Length: 293
Image 1 (spheres, helix red, strand yellow):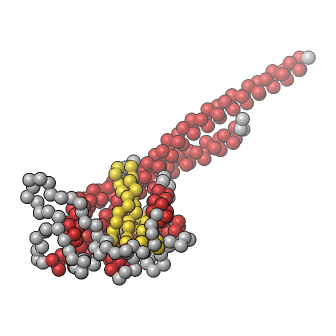
Image 2 (image 1 turned 90 degrees about the vertical axis):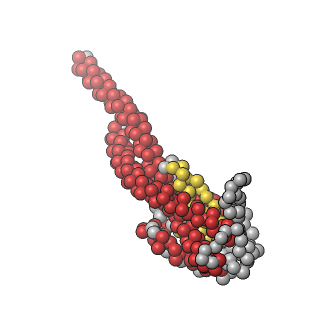
């Protein structure tokens, strides 16, 4: 049985850890509220714009839609979106595992662009790490806004258009709720036409038959690039909200574990203290008996 001093030291240590995890849980909960509001406001707009973009792209000639050109995949770029900090359970690890699984099954050359320090730490020492794209993208989460993300999306679009990459795929955690994050693999480029069709009896325009206003060229030059920028921004917002949800859940579990451990340690401490007192009493009684003798 450990000594009383050792048990007291462990109790103090666990108490300190519990205070830290409880504080981190509250901080993450506050940040989660803001991040959740941001993604819930953005998601309907981004999804509808994505549907329109896919339908418009499906109706374009190959010469018109440079972002929808389907070509033989020889070079694939995976965009790994993780967090800058840990202590969020399996939040970052599951993205890294997903990238590795995808890379093993992908034909041709594989490159990884890391957004987030945790992804950078994992891939910068691998042959997949890309060197012709920015490596300081972790800063995006310091002040996450559309204006900060748009240039990165434009760079990816340019790299696809000039043939540097034949396919660009986003891999990130999609926010479902505070306790659930869904690993999502989403093709960014080339644009994928939506598979939705107008329901029977509906007067909705069928896929690829939109009336263009002001004209098709303006749609191609302005709406599609903007929609791609929104798609990347939504993925980062999703990951940002999912990160705080994962961290809040992890810190909640850590706090509960600390409570459970404290109960066990206090029980051990009381047993050790009781045994110590019993030994002292026995020594006193033994000493008294020896004096009588």
